[in-house]
Length: 291
Length: 287
Image (cartoon, rainbow over all chains, first blue to last red; front, side):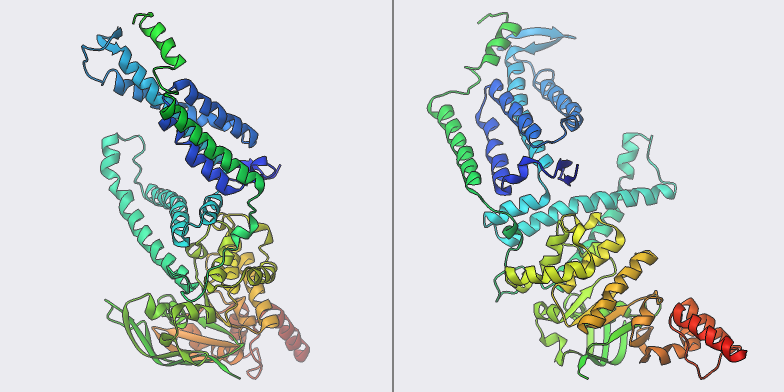
């Protein structure tokens, strides 16, 4: 099966996702990522995660790759819980659900931790969905289709490209220093931090050289921040993507869903933590139903 | 024959250096010629190449005297954006010149800068992509293809702008022999089919010598020798004294000549095939 490389992995070339215009994909990411900021009810935020997983499956992304995000998600949850409970201070006004090693675990702080965690997690899943199914070029096409000035899209492209270059340069510097006997592997963190300058200085020098070469390269091909000034810059890439009726409908649906969430949240007072099923369940579990 | 490029008493010294990188260069390059520029590292070859398309003095600080004419116009009077349509420059490190996320975007970048129409871009892509044999790479990121492919992508991205003069600064320095050969095959096609003016700065001479019409030796910032390829390599002793390492076949026949085993009137062969033919002729003569 022929695969297309995306920012985070590979998607089969015949994935139904490629029928959707890149602008719709970016628009989906931007709009749906706002939902967890508007929604407090954890079960609805978990529903967004389910939607993201469904879309990953629909896009024929290998779901086993999600396993690599499990440790990150768990440690993030643990840190959020820790910062809200053990490191959250003493609050005599709160309800103590239980004590662990003498630390009081307040019901209100646990609820707050669950609230934060279930809002962060969907954003991560949505980003994973986008990065797993999109190439750098899709982001550029989306921006250029939305008439973002070329210079901005170009800067974004360069920023994306520079990430790979810095990683590559770092690997070269590390190998070169290792080959000459500098290997902080197995040493203490304090030692590693102290010696980090050994990597930073050559990396900085490489970055300066690369930017110099890069400036030469773009000037040598006639680029200036305003193009050739007297000529209109065409956009050849955009001619390879068609924005179809289906794409328009999807944009409308995504926009309407945002409007719907705004109305439910601020007009009808829904999607709040207070009215959520999760809160009722937490109350039952942590307070034993006590009001 | 018209003159593509002319240097008149041209000197260039980078700021904060005591010695000029180029000293009093006088040079004429005819339109349609393939020119090889050789010389040891640090001799000023790259500075000479950068002076041809205006990167020097536009992108570098320094002191410039004399003049460089491209198709009859002095380089400093031509806006950089127009100059790059007349003189295309391919750098030695192809990766350093990539500006886009896919090979296709990379190739069209220059054409878009020129303000070509979509139809013109398509037409040029249809020409340059098969010429440089990069069809299977179009969707790939340019920095993820092999070294030889990278250099052909870099070449295509400049060729697409159809500059009448192409300058290549050590285009094969990072390639294996096969990669080198393929780059020179493209240059050969350009010479035969499009009569382009091609100026190649190169250390590896095996592929360059059979293609070049004119050779230039640069040494310590000075142009020491300019001659057509055959007479140029007749002065092999002089070239070797100036740190030029000729192709094995040239050196072999030069040594034969010095030892008196090869007729002094016969020119030195510039390729292995020509060398084999000369040897056969030599044996026939001796029989």
